[in-house]
Image 1 (tube, rainbow, N blue to C red):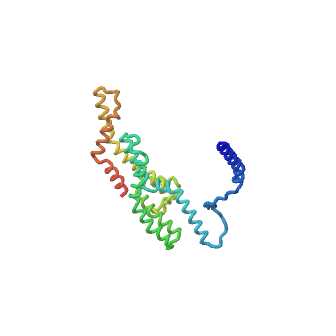
Image 2 (cartoon, rainbow, N blue to C red):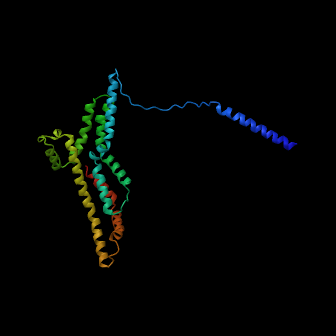
Amino acid sequence: MNRKANCSLYLVAVVLLIIIMPVLYSIPVQAAPVALPKIGLEVGSSDNPQDVALSLQILALLTVLSLAPAILILMTSFTRIIVVLSFLRNALATQQMPPNQVLIGLALFLTFFTMAPVWADVNNNAFQPYLRGEIAQEQAWTNTMEPLREFMFNQTREKDLALFVNLSGMAQPDNKSNIPTSTLIPAFAVSELKTAFQIGFIIYIPFIVIDMVVASTLMSMGMMMLPPMMISLPFKLLLFILVDGWTLVVQTLVSSFR
């Protein structure tokens, strides 16, 4: 009897579940609304001239940010530093040691160090006065370019500058102020490459001597199947460590801009 009663209760429970479940699923469930951010760019009319000026300033800032990599590479000391560091790694024949990320990071911070006086001048005479509203945008741009142009003129060879002046077809300038920035930048970049290659040649000389000595020694011992690069690499590293190579390279690079 108890067994039959339990079976009856189970049957009643199953029937109730079958009847109730569709009712439960039919009840609408409302979730709490979630606020989603909306970002949009709109072009419309404005009666306030300050809104137009602010929009133009934002557009100018975006333009400068898009050109920032080219400005960093071609108008600062970055080119010379990264080329010399690349020459150093190739002269040591250490393949990918140090990695590219380390070399680029070191080149960036050395660039910040060497360009610190120039950027301090730009900040004091252009950026901060413009933020305080003391000078107009055109004057701020002029004050920004003056220290950069002076830096590039100091590092540019007259021969390279004369080359691009002749290629541009402009009249012979009387002074530096008559040379446009578009002519100065490529002349500065070519001069930086020449200087970097000269420093790289000097770096290569001691390591080439080690390669020649090791190759001659192995040949005289009859070990022609043994790669000379594998034997000369420890001696290159030892020489580089003994002369404190990183200090010499960094000191040479920083001193070459002063």
